[in-house]
Image (tube, rainbow, N blue to C red; front, side, top):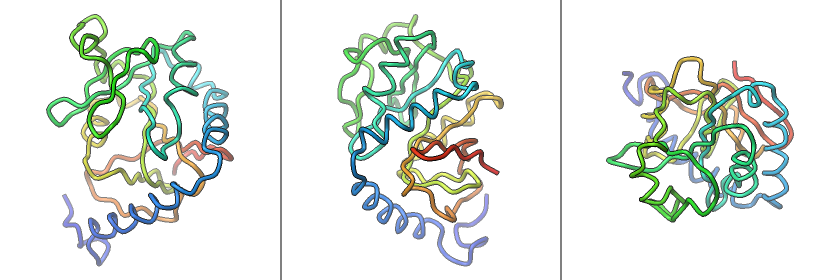
Length: 203
């Protein structure tokens, strides 16, 4: 693994933290996030790759993130796709099948997670290798697919457990697309970035 300062000539972790602060502030200023989130979902669901996916892992949007909780997850779960949502367990993400919004309670970091009785039901457990398409949150992205997360590394630990043909899709507002995200060897890239105005197929 590269040293944090070797490849860039500066401390990558410090650069990430500064960029996190800037992008968090810019995302918080987004006007009409409900309309923009709906536009993102419409663009995503118009793609054949989404419609051909049998199992889709959704993140549950909170605060100023793309609003997936009602606009996307519940709508997807009402169709043919098997919808999966994550929860935190022992510093890792575990996956459970989602049926409707009543399945969720407020969990770690204030993020809605599956109720405990659902986590205890082995019939609802989903293994990472069963996922065909994963939707990823983040603070910023570049066109090479580099992703700036929140620093806890949950998705960086999950993504290597997915199949190599699992499509990794970031959902973002246009203000979250930047020229360059500082990245290190262990940082996982995305394949697509979907915004209200564009679908970026990463280089």
